[in-house]
Length: 133
Image (tube, rainbow, N blue to C red; front, side, top):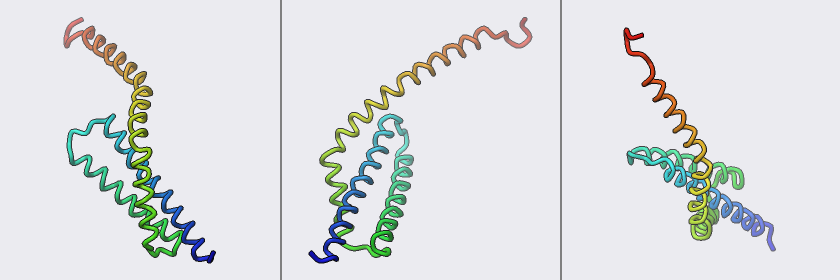
């Protein structure tokens, strides 16, 4: 096999990997959105814009690293195929179990916060008003 074909195959696999990684990172944002409800669509849009700026920079770095910054079609195809492969194979499970796991991990923290609130509310009720002794 030609050295160029071997290099293109390796670069394609590298792009495939990064497509999966970028889709995984977006799913992490989706998990955070399910745990922390966003009341405004504007905040979701801001998160998306920040994510896509990050993706653009990351793709540029990948292209710069493997091909002196030149965007080749097989790199784009690799990124897209990697993302689709991840989304079809693993995304549903990662989101489902990721939300459950974070919920389980946050449960003790929520209980601690509720106990602290109860204590603070009882301290406020017991505090004397202005001028009272």
